[in-house]
Amino acid sequence: MRDTRPAVSVEAGLAAPTVGTWWPVVGIGAPVREGVVIGRIVRVGRPLDVVAPKGSLGACTRLAAPGAAVEHGTLLVALGDGVAVEGEEPEETVSADAPPGALAVRAETDGTVYLRPDPGSPLFAPEGDAVGAQATVALVEVMKTFTPARAPVAGTVVRVDVEDGSSVEAGAAILWVVAD
Image (cartoon, rainbow, N blue to C red; front, side):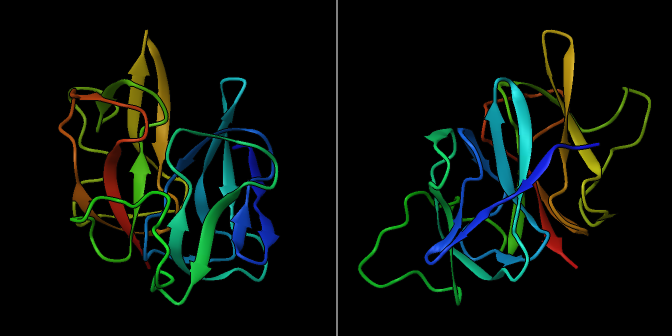
């Protein structure tokens, strides 16, 4: 069972439920609703999925920088109607060429990314495929330890940004999913 914890609701958006290192899986403009995984906090080497709590609804207008050290209550995701607040710069934005409304599946660590369970098997989630929420879509290997990269929501894979067997850095987008 995955370790999950709901974000803390604050007036400006969703805040960290614990301390650790923040890795967002949503991007600017991504829809956020109750139960959506908004990112992961890694603490003491263990990833903790952070989900939008009951009553959450809106679009991500700002987010804390990937790899940022966060404390309980640190604002992770600001919610709005999909337009950033005038005069405010987002703390971190996804790449300008990110698919509209797509959620990124990001590498939690530096390592080698594998898009299939073994060399002779088909891809976990090729472009255009439907995936379930929390489905394994890639593996990131570091020193013979494999960490699954999971889809944040049920949806369709709209773009894959890496090649099977390539190197990735922590926080890099592996692929993008648009929610159903």
